[in-house]
Image 1 (cartoon, rainbow, N blue to C red):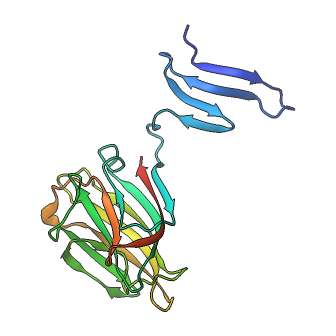
Image 2 (cartoon, rainbow, N blue to C red; image 1 turned 180 degrees about the horizontal axis):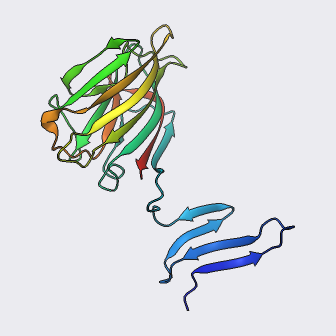
Image 3 (cartoon, rainbow, N blue to C red; image 1 turned 45 degrees about the vertical axis):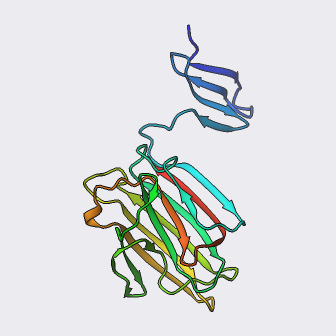
Length: 218
């Protein structure tokens, strides 16, 4: 008979643990969960559990022209994603851009749109090559830059355009803080574009220290 639950030890209530398990398998001997050093590793993404699945994590002090996340991470596995990160700029007084990808390439031709809310000020842009995550320009000193989080929805839909909703906090040239809400994505006529990635850059084309995490929404 194939083992479903392999138990190494059972202890009484005065011990450190009651049951110790190192493997959980199904009836066909397929590994489901392995436990080592107190860490449980799932062989597949849990179904029906909900929550977030970490897909990508990067932290670096190396300059980059952009942060590019492609179809390896943004694909048909999930229809919604959560992204959180920080970016410091190389040059003072620049803009922070998010550009969506489709078919493996950054979408151009003014097919993005966005609306910013910052201190009661509006920043509606009907069509652009990017989604902006700042109101005033962004500073490049330590402690400045952009801190952001956003959800991506409908990335696989051919009925509703990909939708971005999130928040940002920036500091501009004199270090003064700003914060705002961003809502954007593909504009309505581009509803059929399947989004399979995104690109983060600045208006001068260079980023300094940055870190970013991408989660699939289960």
